[in-house]
Length: 72
Image: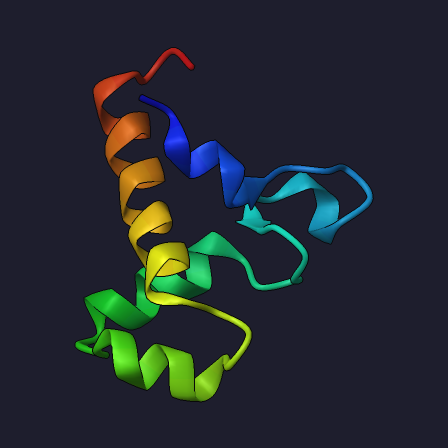
């Protein structure tokens, strides 16, 4: 279902409402950019130790949801 919502939040008081991993200030777009640039999950976690593989998967699920539901 929308399991990614348990890991991603949008709060106007955090980074202007941009989606971030909950309980961090790590924006989803940074994770997606790193993946696009060829970083592995391990590389991303090394850079951002607060993240888990599940957090990274949630960013991918979130982006897929947005592509499949453009009116959301």
